[in-house]
Length: 447
Image 1 (cartoon, helix red, strand yellow):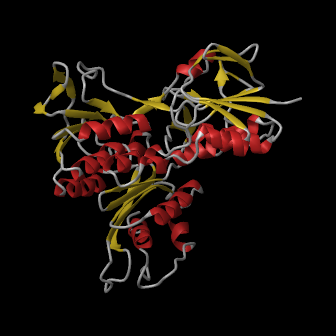
Image 2 (cartoon, one colour):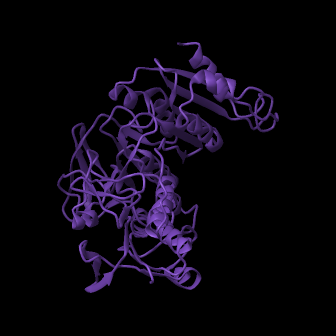
């Protein structure tokens, strides 16, 4: 008997789940419904596509015809699911009813815009999809001053894109530092000063009260005053899109996202739903640092979850572990990365911390192309376990943050990390003692 698998959502989690399900059960019928016009694209690349560094067509990996021809998966774009019958296992989309044996929900997140007046004016944008990005790119051509609300990763990446397009850029941020949840204030200061050196203006500890204008935006009104502009971009974070999970009445956790088991199966009134799987930005995860729920709205996390959801929807029994959410961003000429808890998040969760920081170079000091690198490692003062790390550098730091993320995931103490770390050396690309080890040694000396 053919297994009918329906996937709702075409992002990293949804398309990974669909492809994995088909690969796990080649005879299965796999359908994907998405409200989006595009599928299988990289939203992380949108700021650089807006700037013109990357072509829009290059960030789309595959189109629906590819999935039909190469993988036997039917993808329906611009399609909204309006009802789900969990008892009879049926989905209603565009007025048609489709039966399922397994349902995968991967509806992602939506930009959380503050409830202030004027957000519907012409010239006010959010950036989540390719369609959003293209609208922003077109509008920016005729704009002179852009206000970005929010100093998270997307806001900072967008600020450089606009600045390089010759715009005046003002960032309005409610917190006292940039990237407040994921980096500590000392590391955030390095990032902000770098951006200020590129001419970006920061209005910190300031809330937006309204967007002012008649038909088109003319200014933003904040607790710190009014700022004239002709374009506003809200980069104020992403929250789980609960519209589809709500059709089934799935349980929502304290982080306002769907609660799932390690098998990616959700709960309804406390009981696991056996034939439904949920993955991506719409779910809350478990932290590997301590047993608390966290959000991990990263493409890498979505793919991990999509693989497990897809396999289990096809009849397997796989599980996913907790997360440490390693992330990396290129902000101008800076490469910034982190994993685990920041010092502030640790303290909020009752963990007393100690940290070590080291400054060094990415290669031998006598190399002309050496870049400065700052590494910070955070540990639990009681257990000595590494619980977080942050890096700011002038070149790629992906390998270093992945190294530290593995240590956090495996619950390594600082002492174990030092004793069991060995690094390659060539003066053109590395140093005899990597700055990560120097930071770990500094941390170890502070207990």
